Image 1 (cartoon, helix red, strand yellow):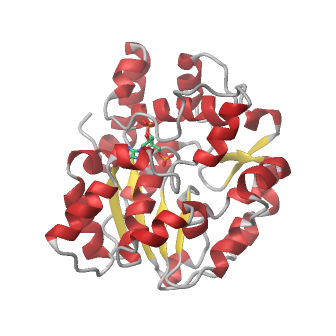
Image 2 (cartoon, protein in one colour; image 1 turned 90 degrees about the vertical axis):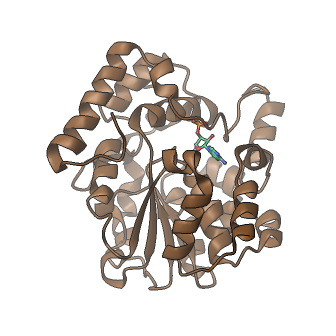
Image 3 (cartoon, protein in one colour; image 1 turned 180 degrees about the vertical axis):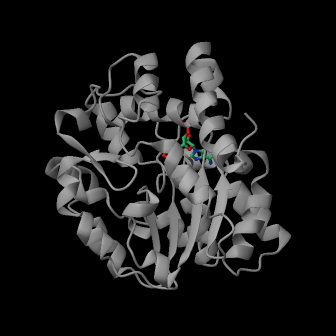
Length: 307
Ligand code: A3P
């Protein structure tokens, strides 16, 4: 799999054998020992499930709809991707994060801290399960997630391989953060815990105001209908795509100037449901669906999607 991650060695971590760059082994314990606060708010998702979308929603809810700061400050600063600087190259850290240490930054945020992680359940800080901060989890239908991840790897990891081959790698659990199904299953099984809210990308697409309402309630925030609609408008795909505080425009415009990506390629890319069925061969789509049914319906008698 020819992506940046493959030019550096990878390894498997934790109970589920989560695929991450090998260098992450130096930081597993540090992350496990991270001091969690009860008033933290975490957004935990596998990559490409609508993390950024959920982060912007959650940050604004937690910070009483402070649109001004949301506009002025980059999401990475407001809502750091905790483990990120522990496995990227020094070059990426300098260029993309301007040298930021994301673990330290997350730790030093003014409470209530908003922290993002893509780590699976068993690699998250131990205190998550004792301090029980609020966690908003977002899952996305696996075929669509794989398609989104394919374009993400083309954009940011220099993947030039075949699309169907990428899906095969996704299915075989050798892409970053795989296995995705089990990541989602572990939180699906925790969905009734009072400190966990399990949302899906598909629900956000279908009825964003309802998801905002539910998430606000979970966070103990009272919003008027007008405030909910204004937030939904702010979170609308077109607005998010044009919002430099969330669309990593600074990095992408540099890549465009250097001729590394085309004008059309974007981080906030298409934002639709059901692309998996169009982009995958029918055989691959059937394999994905079979696994989704096996992991969810057959193993635990429930599934976030109708497959
Ligand atoms: P696509 O690649 O399918 O377009 P993440 O933030 O976890 O990396 O997820 C990225 C995915 O969420 C991308 O999916 C992106 O376009 C989509 N997304 C981001 N903001 C969105 C929004 N406001 N509405 C719908 N989809 C959005």
